[in-house]
Image (cartoon, rainbow, N blue to C red):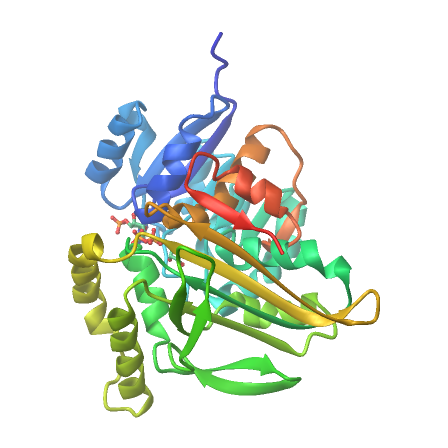
Amino acid sequence: MPTSPTHTILVLGGYGFFGTRICQSLATNQSIRLLIGGRDEDRAKRLALELGLAPDQALAIDANAADLAQTLAALRVDTIIHTAGPFQGQDYHVARAAIGAGANYIDLADGRDFVAGIGQLDALARQRGVFVTSGASSLPALSSAVVDRYAPRFHQLTSIRHGIASGARAPGLATMRGIFGYCGKPFSRLVAGHHETTHGWLDLQRHQFAAPVGKRFLGSCDVPDLALFPARYPGVQTVTFHAGFASASGHLFVWAAAQLVRLRILRSLAALVAPLHRISQHLEPFVSDKGAMFVAMEGVGVDGQALSLEWQLVAAQNHGPHIPCGAAIALAQKLAGGEELPHGAMPCMGILTVADYLAALQGFDVREIAA
Ligand SMILES: NC(=O)c1ccc[n+]([C@@H]2O[C@H](COP(=O)([O-])OP(=O)(O)OC[C@H]3O[C@@H](n4cnc5c(N)ncnc54)[C@H](OP(=O)(O)O)[C@@H]3O)[C@@H](O)[C@H]2O)c1
């Protein structure tokens, strides 16, 4: 007999690129009453219809609305999943509204300061008895789960270098606005024990991924892990993150544009984001549908010998875009299943294991290559 849903989850940005994938997964959970929110009610309604939900499960909601807390309370939202980025430069209005309404809060943020600063809501979230987490996505939820898994093999972990090479399918505009926002702009990272300055999408490298992905160009990115990992893994001397596009020529185009921003010939790539997004959608059939993530760790093993390990995750059939959704899905399922998650506000680290994360991606062409 079907059970009646007991846990109400609102996905804000629910018909966006990642929001849609999260909703598709959560709509199949009988314990969840799913609400799809965004500023465009028609788009929310179209997705609700596709997923077999009732029309009143699609809502026009603006993340910036002053009365958001009252709206969440009126809808009796138990958990909100916030995907309405970009998060770079956002404040914690949505998280505060969730806490005010007594709801748990999960976001997919990839903004370094945004994720690293979520702890400022800790006391408020504890008082209200809710779970608040930021960065429930590939970074830092999955990346830190991988490092946590291998850390016990090290007497001293000294270096964490990680990266993502995407497949052909371009993410949504919010993601592209976020990642191109720091294109050519300086930011700091820890290398060999010193804070050094690098620039967004520069520091060009090639990384060898497992077959069938092969070698991909990567450029440096400003991500939460650069701030979070040095504190989480004491004694670590190097933390870097690089990402790259499926098309080598597309990647080199972004690299060249980043040089122009660095040299102040261009002010930013903001104006190019929408056209680049359209172009990448047109080029999708001609570009590799495979993508991958790596986490390379170095240090001294528990036996006192030098140790280096590399973990990879390889996605095919353009299933890579499901990966950033794994953490929000896994956490939502735990909450809907009545599992207690810690009260307070924290970056999404130490809450999910790699196995928890990958379980949420079952059915997709995503293959782990353990170290
Ligand atoms: N941490 C990681 O590893 C990681 C990896 C990948 C992506 N991400 C994050 O995922 C986020 C979502 O990316 P995406 O590719 O899914 O973007 P997207 O397709 O542009 O989706 C954003 C959604 O938010 C909605 N939205 C925007 N402003 C809103 C507002 N004020 N109120 C309510 N809804 C609003 C949009 O709909 P309307 O405009 O119609 O309202 C849209 O549905 C990105 O910002 C990125 O930070 C994180």
